[in-house]
Length: 100
Image 1 (cartoon, rainbow, N blue to C red):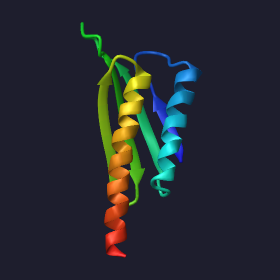
Image 2: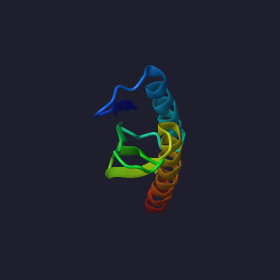
Image 3: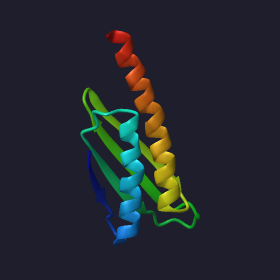
Image 4: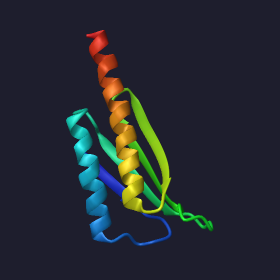
C-alpha cells in the first residue's frame, strides 16, 4: 500500500511520518486490497488543546473510506483513525464474504 502524508502549514518530522506509515500498514492484515492511503495532518488555530486534526482517506476497490479525528497529538489522532478504519474494513470484508 502506498501512503501519502500531507502536512499543510507545518513540516512533519520523519519520526511522525514513519509512525503514521507503520500504523497504516497494520490495516493490511484486515483487508489486503488497499490501494493507497492519503493522510492529512493539520494544526487548527483554536484555543482548545485538541487542535491536531488527522484525516485519512483509504482507497479500496468499490469505494473509499474516510475518517477524521481531532486529538491532542497527531499520534493519538492517527491511532483513533486507524481503529475506526479497522472496524470499517472488517465490516466491508464480512459483507464481501456474504456475497461469495
